[in-house]
Length: 144
Ligand code: FES
Image (cartoon, rainbow, N blue to C red):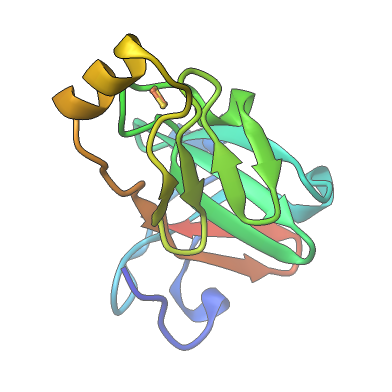
């Protein structure tokens, strides 16, 4: 969902560690949920966060933050255990790569041989779902 004018205007503070203690507010276009503190994030870091029962991957490259589904659209590999190079995350299971800016498939599976060809034939490439992120002071917010 698109993020409206300012993060604080739409802010729905919802720390994942204290979800039941906080309220949410619906903004113009969606719900911004506090995921983690920006100060907890280092450049090149990936982390899984649970927000409203959904697992998200949060990543930081440079000064930018990205949010996506935490599981690979191929066969559910946990992307946070993979590799982050710039904005491209590589799945640890079969090497698919996705651009966290758009969810675009950069590479669908890696390898060679019969198993690789069968895997490619059985499941066609699927984009990774990505979500807008806003930063409000030290809060990283995900538009869920
Ligand atoms: S589970 Fe990610 S590439 Fe297969």
